[in-house]
Image 1 (cartoon, rainbow, N blue to C red):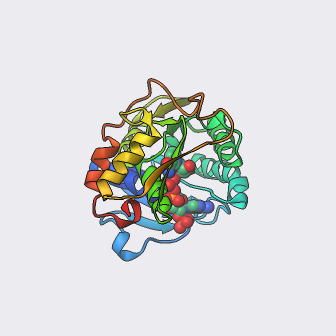
Image 2 (image 1 turned 90 degrees about the vertical axis):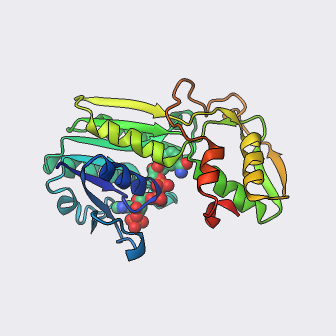
Length: 263
Ligand SMILES: NC(=O)c1ccc[n+]([C@@H]2O[C@H](COP(=O)([O-])OP(=O)(O)OC[C@H]3O[C@@H](n4cnc5c(N)ncnc54)[C@H](OP(=O)(O)O)[C@@H]3O)[C@@H](O)[C@H]2O)c1
């Protein structure tokens, strides 16, 4: 059985990759700076500690791995600055360990917006493009959970925030994991780039309404104006990239017991 290593395998996307890879018959090693709490550890997965920002533990984390899926995150100014370099360090370690293919999770349309967070994704994508091992970047649209968290957060203040004149294509993180593991299994050399989004492209207001119905919220929806043309011109959208099959409403239904997202 081939070994698939998941960088950030304890995170939201990384955990989904772990499950998808196990289901496809891979041996799985997940690494991050901290081990997961025992209750969150998935049976049969090897969890190890490694830090992509410093390089400590990376060689051991990648030892014997055939493929690497990078689901790392870098929020906050310092982490954003370190994010591309952490990617280069990870790729160098992957090359040194004989990894056959490395796949990075990135964000749909990240090159269309100038915020530092998105710039850090684009800079890391370039490191993947220039890597010595064959690589793939999979850009994903916003996860269903991100929208739900936004709505839930606002509802604490009795408003459900929406974005005026904006549409979105949210996707289930399980569908993203499927795209990432599929990309890891490909034989292509060089570098590939793919964008995946959810099955629906709809106004954010509609998703806010679905969330309200699902959780029984009586808070009002506020369509907030967002400066700039990113949303109003639909530059956040990636037409023709529908890949996920789970709609936001279906996801809400299957996460009805998850209080973090739904209340
Ligand atoms: N949320 C969305 O809607 C969305 C949409 C498209 C793409 N994405 C992208 O998906 C990626 C993953 O997001 P996520 O929400 O799954 O993030 P997350 O839940 O915060 O998980 C991040 C993972 O990376 C690990 N990590 C962070 N820094 C590390 C380091 N220096 N060395 C080793 N491990 C490190 C974390 O564990 P430790 O902290 O213990 O190290 C954790 O396992 C991000 O790049 C994000 O931009 C997200």
